[in-house]
Length: 212
Image 1 (cartoon, rainbow, N blue to C red):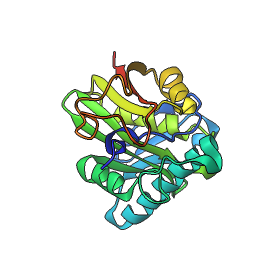
Image 2 (image 1 turned 135 degrees about the vertical axis):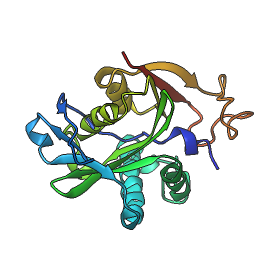
Image 3 (image 1 turned 30 degrees about the vertical axis):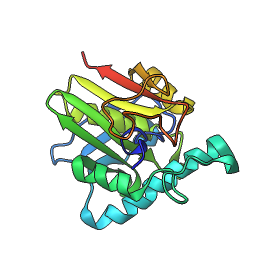
């Protein structure tokens, strides 16, 4: 499998606005504050929704590629898809998967993995039909609230995704700590230990956020 399996999981998030996050007492995590955020929460992914989750994830990632590259895009991990079914399924099976809901309807998804005080944001996507409403930022704030034990969060994004770089650095407080490219390979990734990424040869940024 291509290097994408580990490094193209948080490509698409959407623009964001500051909000207040609160946790409900019944297990679902609700968001309030901005007018657009009313009725938004994240809930554990149900098995019956797994197939639609995968489809929605691929749709969101493909939309981001179309915005960036138009019909010139050739960054597909499998035929017609920026992110493959296998990549998404492995992330679901090995992490915590949630649906982002607004007024009872799915508007995105997020997958994280937690190992003690270290957390990794595996996948975060928002449906193209609800872009620019702060849903990505709201979701991330909720994740932080859910896991106060995490001291360091990590994620990655392709070099060209300026919107994501802005989102993680300027909105969420991440810092760019590493740039994987042909001169600096990710030795922890078996698919990149001895060669550059075939899908994104110009590189990937790694981000960290150290919680106070």
